[in-house]
Amino acid sequence: QFPRECVTPEGLRSGRCCPTPAGLENDPCGATAGRGLCVPVAVDARPHGPQYPHDGRDDRERWPVRFFNSTCRCNGNFSGFNCGRCRHGFTGDNCDQRVSVVRRNVMQLSADEKLAFVSALDQAKRTVHPDLVIAMRRFQEIFGPDGNTMQFENITIYNYFVWSHYYSVSKTFLGAGQASFGGVDFSHEGPGFLTWHRFHLLQLEQDMQDMLQDPSFALPYWDFAIGGSTCDICTDDLMGARSSFDMNSLSTNSVFSSWRVICESVEDYDTLGTICNSTESSPIRRNPAGNVNRPMVQRLPEPQDVAACLQVNTFDTAPYYSTSDESFRNSVEGYSAPQGNYDPAVRSLHNLAHLFLNGTGGQTHLSPNDPIFVLLHTYTDAIFDEWLRRHSPDSAVYPDENAPIGHNRGYNMVPFWPPVTNAEMFVTAQDNLGYSYAAEWPAQPFTVTEIITMTIVAALVVVAVVFAATTCAVRAKSRREGHQPLLVDQYQRYDDDKSQSVV
Ligand SMILES: O=C1C=c2cc(C(=O)O)[nH]c2=CC1=O
Ligand SMILES: [Cu+2]
Image (cartoon, rainbow, N blue to C red; front, side, top):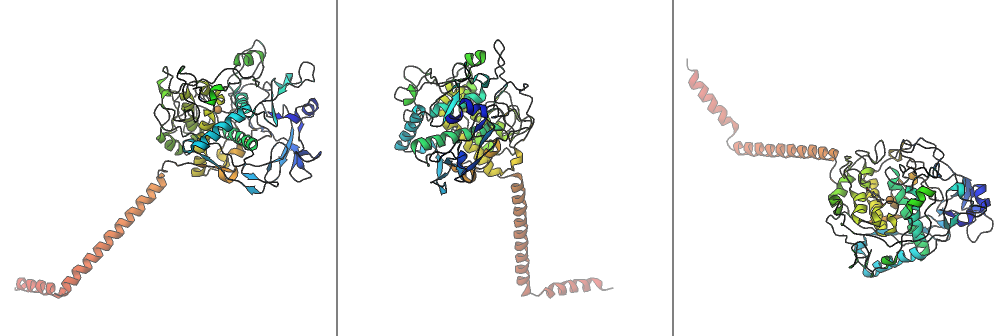
């Protein structure tokens, strides 16, 4: 999870990772070319929640200073570990040309667009990442047995996407013979769930844009809130149909049936303290709606579940965890009901979509191995973005302390490099991150304030109409009586009076 050129023995010992961009000579972060500066890494120092009780036992604490404490901070639209690339949504030598990256519903792609997307994923599965390498050991063993054999290795672009998710959810190794600690998760069960997966997707999208040399390449999304028990994207022209011979496998007509997963050796990682590497093992397993032991996960979320969660007004609530009540984040993640109420028995929206897959895609340490993960998470990100657009929250609604470790607002998200905080992803995508969604949303129900306002306005209109009608009626009446002046009445009354008044 670091640039290949930084993980030399001297590089790691220096703690400095400020490489020179391609095409420049000995110019860390392209400083001379005005692209950026090599600066100390800022690290979140606020307290985290009680879920992680250890200190100094996990390389991910105060990420990434266990490995590096200096990084490139890029100017303007420059970006990347050496400021050699452009921010998302920009292109050109000076990164001053906007490019539109629109994430579309995968079911609305043409046959050619579907084929191109599936082929691009397969190419990413086979293409070695041009910049990043992964650690195969924890830091204390990273220099190898002889102190000079760095324990990093190459990985493909797509397998890096899988590995980074695994690394963020892996247990804390506490030593041989001791059970590893599993109560830690740097990308789920906390406010960082949405921001972490947002950057995870952004990294893959950028890596694929570079691989395709197409800065407008966009990941599509899967609207999984369709109810029922059919996986509409599980077809051979998309994510692969079910095998006719084995209900847990993919059809051999799909390229994904030849994919092999990584990060399966959890026993080794937990007992030997090793880390997932790029070795591939078994095929993807998937059996949508097939978990007969858990009927609740045999159906996909319903469209109204999305409408409901978008109405939850609070982004997250203490303890900022998978038990949070009235939390939009816990609802869209799927540990609370879509309406917001926490219920330990519930699995909804994102979690339900994972569990519905009933195989590789439902096991947190393995799930990105199933490419449906990409489409499931772009839709989850689209819901996040729609919530941000509707509620326009201040950044302060994202907790800056006491969230589970890794989830505070200022925490550098594990294991991304260069360092990027949850806060940097807590923004609307189109205005800040260079991409948008072509998505329709359920009509936004009126807020209580709007209902009250409309009731008052309606009442005023009724009063005005009644008043106008009454005035007209009175005027019409008086006009009619105007041909028999009012006086007649008075005379009549006068006569009546007179006749009675004779004394
Ligand atoms: O890959 C994942 C698998 C998950 C299973 C649950 C659950 O709620 O039981 N949640 C998951 C999230 C994942 O990312
Ligand atoms: Cu995940």
